[in-house]
Amino acid sequence: MSQGNTGVTVQAVNAHACPVREVLDRVAGKWSVQILVAAAHGPIRFTELERGIEGISRRMLTLTLRNLERDGLVTRTVHPTVPPKVEYELTPVAHELHDTLQRLTDWAERNRVYVAEARAAYDAEHRPESLDA
Amino acid sequence: MSQGNTGVTVQAVNAHACPVREVLDRVAGKWSVQILVAAAHGPIRFTELERGIEGISRRMLTLTLRNLERDGLVTRTVHPTVPPKVEYELTPVAHELHDTLQRLTDWAERNRVYVAEARAAYDAEHRPESLDA
DNA sequence: CCGGATCCGGGTTGATACTG
DNA sequence: CAGTATCAACCCGGATCCGG
Image 1: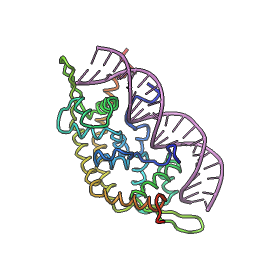
Image 2: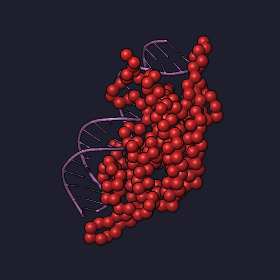
Image 3: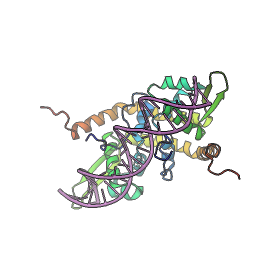
Image 4: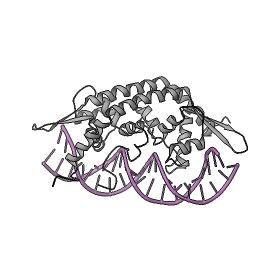
């Protein structure tokens, strides 16, 4: 448990800087946000998440879920039925975060093309991938 | 320039998922946000940033600045003076982002202790680091 | 003062196989 | 169904040296 493979987040030791990084580090994981979004509608099962996120591995799903649970963003409920059944649900705090995340989404939506164009222009200028000749 | 060390961002190929990840990937870099914050007040010089962020290396500062510029979030202005002088400034779009980021900060501030406690509780429960005995 | 280039370690992710 | 364990690969980030 010391050779780097225990968590999914980045939040190393730089949270001291500013609270912005603190929250970003918490959701900076590759899948955290998607899980938060997927579970926003209500309780959802492990397999449901796995099939709904498309591209995530069992390992990453478990790991990310663990961290989310650790931070008090999701609750884990085990139903001791014959075929095991575990449901994950967002906590109120997580719902607040999800709400805030949507504002970021708005920004992304609004400026998506702007950024894409800026990037294309920059690449055309600095990355001689295809010049006119 | 081919063995992985060309950029600072994460934005690999998973931006297709949702716009949330798209924006998060863009600022998920370890220093992006801090630079955005530091430059929010107005034009700022390279060295100013370097000394103001505390802990960032020249390399990372340059790299992050490049990506920010590439995405159209900052502008780079070179003053051909005797000692070179380069100033960076946020674009309007970046200012919007910065504004949105502050909402996230609010969330972080409000729930900082909650998360910390949740984490402590979880660790105490699942990580036998120090039991009562 | 500003920045590029290379070397190199460490953390995070992914694939796969195994278990209750 | 829900997870865990191991192995390997990849990318990010830091240190340092060199150039304008």
